[in-house]
Length: 251
Image (tube, rainbow, N blue to C red; front, top):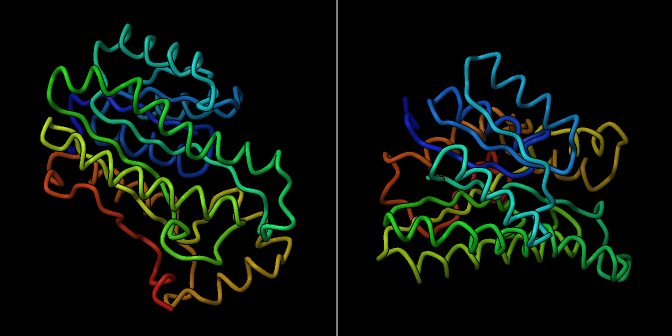
């Protein structure tokens, strides 16, 4: 198994890509720490992991809150003594709004979750990883971290920031055994995306039409790629953005 005897902490795990990755990582042998603000969704993810005989610890936490993040990492260390992999997956967006349509409150909240949350959790875990000179961060960005037109103005900005932060994290700490990768999915069949498609949102329809493969991705496809990137088989993949988008970003 790719992740046997590893401990992985996954944020935004109550649904969508976070849940899919938590289940896939468990299938690959990792012990899982899952977190989200959605208590019922998180409980369902924990049940799904345990249904496949996986090991999971669930912790309710807001990644944009420093005290929550501190408590989250403390509980993970108390339970498993270490964290080998951090999947910074938690993220929100504001529909497909242009800059003039986004309120200051929406902008601040998106930046707090999508960018500050990655920074807070990374900094909380880094001392433990630096001490053992090994640790991996899989930062879930988006093809919206490399191109425009696949989200709102704040979301696109935040995902570009995640890609840049990942590069700088690697630049600063790779020599100390730290590895970081930006995983950049295109349109994926998550509840958030499915809602936009079902409501026939014009931006969602335009995105679907732009995918050369003719279909959206599945959470399981992204999760399988994420598990590989988190494994020791991908040790030389560091500091870069890795797309999984059916060719959506080439057009």
